[in-house]
Length: 238
Ligand code: C5P
Image 1: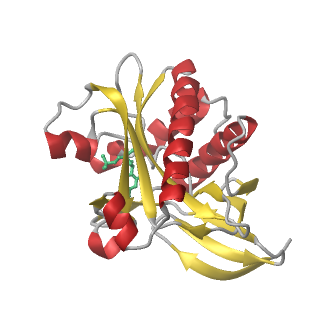
Image 2: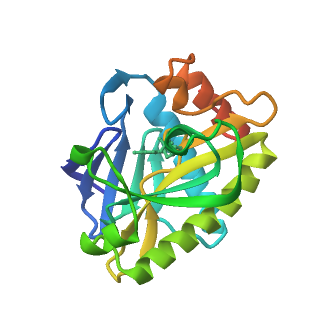
């Protein structure tokens, strides 16, 4: 399969066409951004670790019957994915208070939530990805009410699996962000990535942060944290 032209370049990834209809070539970059692009850095090895971790998690999810755009990993920093029309909603799932939730409604970081929270954010960099509700989604025509039911259901299913999967390797899944897309037949598929860039992952015993908060809050080596996650997931890091 041939890599074609660059279709899109985001903060952390580049997307290329391929010689095969409906299949795209995804390249993970070594760039790190936070606070809607206000904080930037190049961190060697980050793209590779996110590609390896996402590939591993998407494969595990597939075994659970949860389909994604992921087709196969091509190299350390590249994978093939199915073309989907991305739904411009970031679906955030939270098990423990942290980040913007802790700040917004005044909860102490680390407080286990009485119930899992699912939130919708409008995926729009110019607006800073604002929190939105079902009525906003309807007036912006981002997704149908039926699709929202599916998104919520899939997000909770993914949360149930990932929470216990991470638990087995001594990691608490605090919260995470998912993106979904519509396939050519309209079916909703998990897309984008699931990595320490998009999840909060804390060591179960020490509560050490093993995710992008290490970069956001200058807590040490980001690649060391991501390598810990990858190694515990059974990956062999170079
Ligand atoms: O910042 P906040 O607390 O709202 O983030 C919730 C979760 O969603 C975190 O795991 C964070 O890494 C992830 N997230 C993301 N991309 C965004 C916003 C949040 O991956 N644009």
